[in-house]
Length: 274
Image 1 (spheres, rainbow, N blue to C red):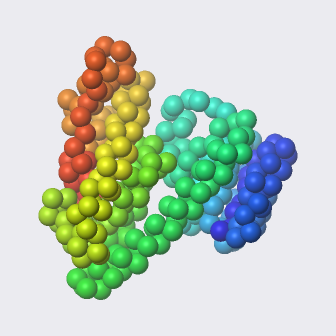
Image 2: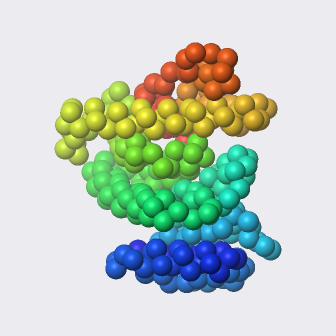
């Protein structure tokens, strides 16, 4: 994988460079302490993963992510920050980052996050191949499914679910649903060789991932109950009563949280693209 690092602290650049270069199959193609200079280089360089500081002078890390994503949507971003502000973190996920790494830098955390992003890239490549195969079989315009898949991924990032193993399974299911034009219960996984047992294992991971999404959503609505966009999305994916129950649970006002339903969540992701 090809990496690019952006941080205005030389010590952070040095530490991240050392961590990444421990893997022989990884290559650092650029390092910069200026986000504006980095933007110019990222516009022309071939890069897989960018590690970017949130609080950069002149051009913030979030703004850099937004601008690079317009030029090259395939670049994956890992954001580095000591800021715990939930609104800023939500804005970063909405801009298109995959994960946060907290400062001070922890080597194990950095290695774990990088491995997860690399896994997501490999999974996306596999899903693209599957979608292409199914598109050719069904004679479905490729742009429709590709666009839908990207929008689903953006929604999952917005919900703060990117770090969950079940997110890759959700993307695989939704990609097939878009290709086959079916809802979740109608989905035929036998077409790609997934057995009933494998489906159950995937659904266990998906359930845990959705639970994280519900918890993140409840936290954000507690902080900002007048966020109409998030409220509408939450009702579509989880149901109003479940979101409300989760909010009360996380505030210590209820003994149990909201329930999650896999078909409702995944069908809701597809409905959002319509």
